[in-house]
Length: 174
Length: 185
Image (cartoon, rainbow over all chains, first blue to last red):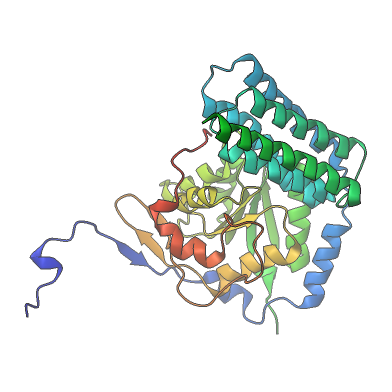
């Protein structure tokens, strides 16, 4: 049996592996952080007094601009139009839960999932995004912090059902 | 004996002021000695060059320069004082294709918002205890995308397109997971 490597061919890709010095480990030592410190940090996070409303309004306004642009200029690049709505949705998802509005995070997450899989921001899809906008705005303006209880679950189900119906219609048309 | 973060310097880059303050106070509670802050990627890179911190934690979505572009500059710009610095990218995205994008820019760890104190600590701890090798090839310079030993978070994922730490390192090397379409940035 031949001892040649790579069938006597020259390697096509040069890959170098580098192990950088772990200066962080040298600085911090061993043992991790105690539960006391982590609990203290978690309490600080939970007790933050940031008012989410102005922040949410900014992202909702940005989402509305995306919706309006999609309605007014439907011939614009589809990915561009989706991105205009996707990024504010991502910000709502990211920040809602950080500032005591987990229901906003859950709803915005559903909106992201919807936007990530639609082919194009057609009229019906934009109507659904608008429904998300209206509902999230109601949650923020109504200061429904926490998961919103049974009312929150109902709102979420209504949005979910709208998305499901949208895709069912699409399947029927094809 | 626990970690002593008092000598550690972290650069935090975030355009959302309340979020910046919240993340900074978490790091201070952890005992981090110095937290430098910047409001976008461009300002972040300047601060990075000036302060040469031990770690960078950056938000993804920022204007004019986002966290991905900042990471690329840190890894590839000749002015970068430390191409190997660990970068944690914070974002609301958790979809696999987004993680791939971050990985390909040279991000070390991915922190999905909203997060809790232990999530942030877990990412920092990963960087300290399980540092990645770096790979230099013709078209990539950054942390090795494969992490071969042990497991990180073992709890439930939010949905089946979310990724585990180990998936991030092992499976993300396979292009088949990339989406055929990518949203314009």
